Length: 163
Image: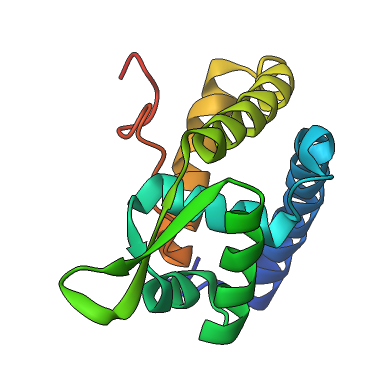
């Protein structure tokens, strides 16, 4: 970095390459973890379930914003998840023009099972790293997630568990 806190083009290229490589690995883990549920949900539909899991009951228009899709796309995704028994959608009692969505117990179970499979696979990878590498990864991924607006995982919100 230079004195003004700006990253050089070479440093930026190195970071982008590292993140792209890491994203390929994470996408592969995500796809493998969803394999058992693939007959029930697509990757974008699972993302909706994860957002509902993190946010709780959510308005359809808010869900569309959180997913970066238009409201009609979010509505179609929600319709499919309702039909699959994974989401409940109801009229907002405080504003009858709005729909509220929440996970069903089956939707919660699916999110928990897929997340457990991801956690297990990531654990296998991370267990081969040194404690110093793990701390650096926590720091880097926390900064990356914050910059991207991703809510933190609440299991270890402050980083390394013994910190």
